[in-house]
Length: 452
Image 1 (cartoon, rainbow, N blue to C red):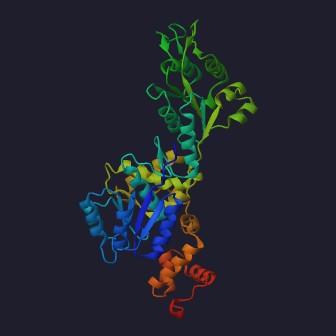
Image 2 (image 1 turned 45 degrees about the vertical axis):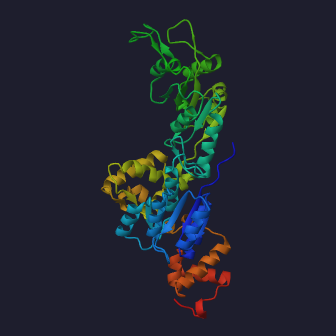
Image 3 (image 1 turned 120 degrees about the vertical axis):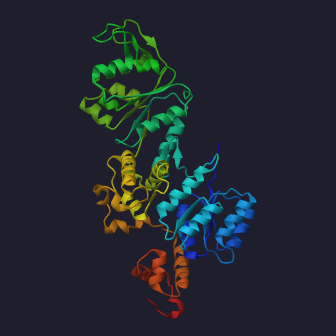
């Protein structure tokens, strides 16, 4: 099957600097972007091409953005519309949404928030395929690191190969296991899970292999274990590295012989179960230290999927936050997240990974009383991660090509009437940085007058 084409976006805005920087951001996200400077160009583009989403300025020369929304909906055109404007007011947002726009953002637009909203709107389309993918089988993200996980699941799921999922606590190892099951030929059978670190050795043995009546005190009846219960399906063994050496030996035999013997039983029963195991530990190190059987390790380590920690895929945080906010909006419909909050969340190291992030968002939503989550609503350990340097770090900025950047600077200076201070503010850079770039690109002050 050939890969799906990237989603095509139409960006309509009369501000050249905004068009240049925003289109660069969207292209970095993997989308195809067509730009228009006014309503006439936008209508022409819509008549000539199919678009998956339109980003539309509220105020345009000639034709008002609201009138374009109204016309499109009267034509029956269902393209998702994200309104963007520097003149954003509650009244303008309400009117845009009333006429049929799908969402509304105000300038200056936080790049992370824009990326998250675009991905969300694209995902709402029936049968939508977003490139790059931002969700897969309950997993969310668009970073290259998490897309590698998506691809690994797609490759191994149709097979019956044993899978070992590795990653820190809270990264979503069970989600990966469920995705493997859901995309396999076993998807109509049972998916059962057990945490090997949560049960004492005797209990875990009984849970996995079952027991016969009278095999130990309290065994008042025969009981099938999870291997038998999952026959034809998938058994997820979470935190396999915490299993005792004795149970490891029994597990190895099940994997080798494809049969299981209940505790206290004489005969064995054939089982057809796919094993997906997971661990937060370094099993190779445990093998070297004698804490994990080498033969079992090689039986489990046929195909490994490593889940990166959240700190290594910070680009996914806006999407994860938006996912959390959507689930909370059922009871808090006005819940949003400020740009500073988003930057703060991206700066945190997240030792608890996605699980910690979702917990923080839920807690902050309560403190924000269902309105906009500000930085002060976050826990102290999260707020402290963002210092003044991180707040202005270039990793939150778009990095367009030199030609695009030069064009944006010229456009901003012209729009600002030659004022470097105003142009720098429009471009999101310091006045000294702007002056240095003007010298770098050989841009003379507008009217040959150096205006502040």
